[in-house]
Each structure stands twice: as C-alpha cells, then as structure tokens.
Image (tube, rainbow, N blue to C red):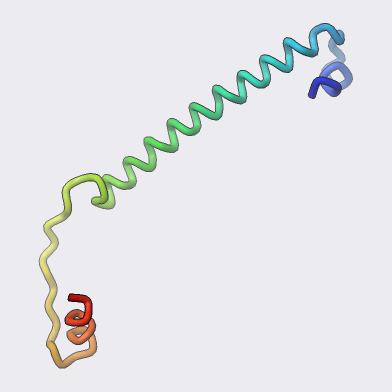
Length: 77
C-alpha cells in the first residue's frame, strides 16, 4: 500500500504514510465493529436455540417399545 498509494491516488509521497495509517486504523475499527455485531448475533441465536436461555418445556414423546422408534428411544436412554 505504501508504494501504491501515490500512484493510484496521485497524492504526494509525503502523504503516503498518513494515508496508510488511516487505512490501517479504519480496518481495525471495522474489524472490531463486525466482531461485536457478529458476537451479538451469535448470542441471540444461542438464546433462541435454548443454549443460553431456559430450556423449553416440550412434552416428552414416547413410542411403542416394539417399534423401531421405541427401540431407538430405549437405546438413547
């Protein structure tokens, strides 16, 4: 970037370092903001799935013990 800024932006070479510093700082800030937004989204997704929040009180389903699903249910216990 240091070498390309003066050629692409047609700016004086003495302004290359300040431009480079500003671009790096903007990238860091953008990285932090996107990370924060992503972490909030993940926390909301976990709460919606019941990972962090209270577990849902779904009724327990039972199957006939002689059926395939019943055997699978017994195996899971």
